[in-house]
Length: 440
Image (tube, rainbow, N blue to C red; front, side, top):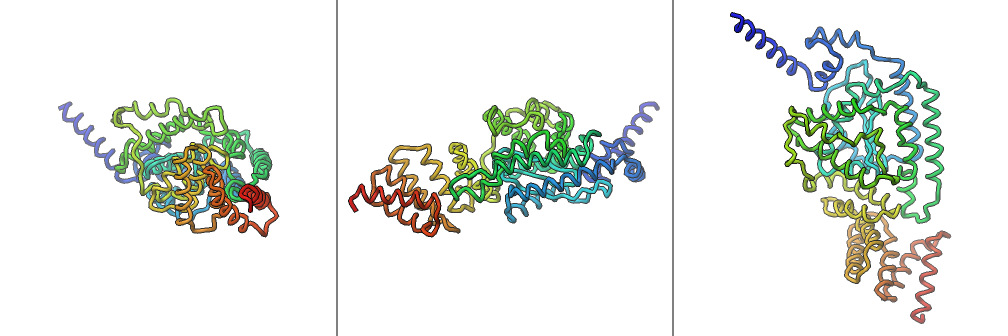
């Protein structure tokens, strides 16, 4: 009799649990679990009414985030690509297709920034920021979805609001943002010399990132999650991936990539902040949880996804351009190879690879390969790329082909002939040297 009673109770609880999981969406269920609400419609509505929504703090963080975004726009750090942006919107609304509770006042929005550092974070108002470095570091759509699901987990559980401290005010946050923007403006006003880099480098986060992406500034905006909240978002994203039949190893592969990036760039301008990323043990935190049933032997870096690389091809090119402008040539080449192998490649990707190879390769066969890349750049150019001729001239000089070098520099100089720029003066100087050398 006792056994039957126990079995009845067990079945009732099981059915109730199943009902709860089918009644609510994945994200609503996670909010219920986090807020300890009763798993029934009346309990959920009551929890919404009684939950402490911290409206004052929420308003401060919303307004501060808007101020920060406006400053980013003034600094021209956003990477504008409507096609890629639309692709990202499609993904975030696949992950979270329904509205957030009205009390949260969250409206999903996504923006890209020009930064070779792999960054992704979100503000309390629902704006997700992802860098060209992060998009380029990832190698599949599932990896990108896992990253976006983590940010949506932070938003769903109001981690930004929880991370807010009573010491912060609108005034102190504005002061922190102002300091970061001042230093970033100083960095971005530095003359980079060659106009080829100017439009994309000025306003990039490579030099300014130490301030605009600093842990202190982002913490003031509610993005300073502790390790517990970081792990919680990881685990929720992992559950969403598995429940929606996505690659269950995608998230751990992303964390593994971040670990590789961190170890490679430790002590440099590209170093990841441990206080923000908590790289140590994050990989193991997911791997060791029995409920995910992940097998270590199956965790491997997957082959490149051509469809994904096609979607982010221009992002790969821009990220490579930032690396080349900072003379980090060897790291630019793998990204350029991905851009070139995709189904959508621009002439600029070939040109950038030629520039990177010129600085890292020296044999005659390498120089011939660079000339071939420059021909590909001409064939695939959708805009004027006069720097193809300056690169051709330099390679022909290496090969002691003075006449070909002269022809290339003449074309380069003609393009800039109306400018009184360093670029035009340099081309004129090269032409004069070559004419003297070949007795013209």
